[in-house]
Image (spheres, helix red, strand yellow):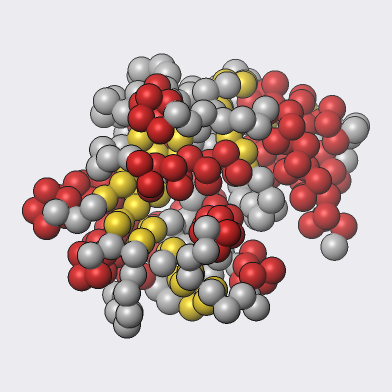
Length: 308
């Protein structure tokens, strides 16, 4: 069972689970997910998409082997528009998913986030770093919900012996991202394709680390199989400034867009780069798709969306 199964990462995860020969039930309330993301697998006898809000509780008949909780708005515009829902899906929704996993004797996986590190004072960020988060800032509804979700997962593991996994997902991109997502890659690509000015917030010196979705999903499944209950970072340790990213996308798109600068959003992290030593040591995982290769694949998808 995959909550958020019609979302960007969730839909790719459904694909990979089906390829493993598993029957998959995807749950989504479609606040940020879309049935179109799983239209290509809707005819599969092993796949079902069910509209459901996990905050209201989940009760399923039959056996469940895995409960993967990937439901949540994930970009600042998305959770900024839905702050209370975002808080609830990270807290109440996580508790409901853990309750289901406990009842079914299933393995539970939480999609956590690099945002639990906030605007980090340690670089790169290892799992042992507790973070620098503003709980009352505009990102607090997402950051603190995910931090609480991790606490719930560990509490159920310790108190009820639920088999749990926590993956801290760093910036990921690829097909099925929303054009209106609001993060750097879709923003820059949509503007470059349209020939519009590309808006870089601040001076662009802030850094991001971008992982292609196929690498991320591979890491998620390997951690599901062989990981332990403690958090693990999944992301690309190759760091790039936001200004470099904008210039690269302009070049790859063959665009004539110019770069303009806007005000830096409140609490925007100055640097973001995962320490993936733990994932490398325990499951032998590291990204395989290079930055420009991945961006080219994502750009091809956005071209198809823009021309549709």
